[in-house]
Amino acid sequence: MLIEILCTGDEILTGKTVNTNYSHMASRLNEVSLKMHWGTIVGDSREDLREAFEQASKRADIVIVNGGLGPTVDDLSQEIAAEAAGVKLKLNQAWLDRMLTFMRRGDHASKQ
Image 1 (tube, rainbow, N blue to C red):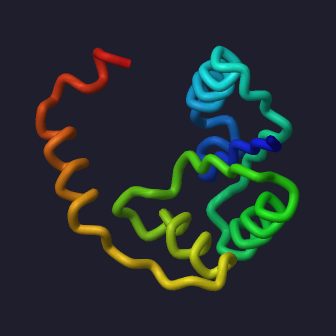
Image 2 (tube, rainbow, N blue to C red):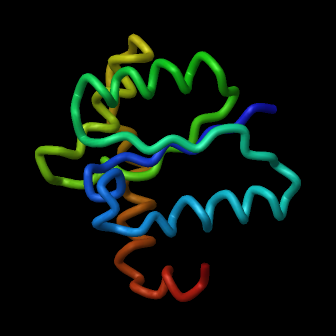
């Protein structure tokens, strides 16, 4: 199984923010005998994001995306991943409700 972690954000690309999420995810995958094949960092440019998603989808069986999922205008991962895959985004209300309940508990970070 070929796995890639795709980390997005100008702050990661420029080194303003240290990419500890990648290290954590790769380490956890390794613990369960899943080997990483690629790790990619891409900025917030729409064109660069689209190219990164398209390349990752061609070479990996599983692509884990970190970043670009927030409420700001430069958080385009969902939209561009859907475009690259040729599908439309669809809200799954049941999963949204589950995530909101989980986040409201406030103790999720300490259990990881």
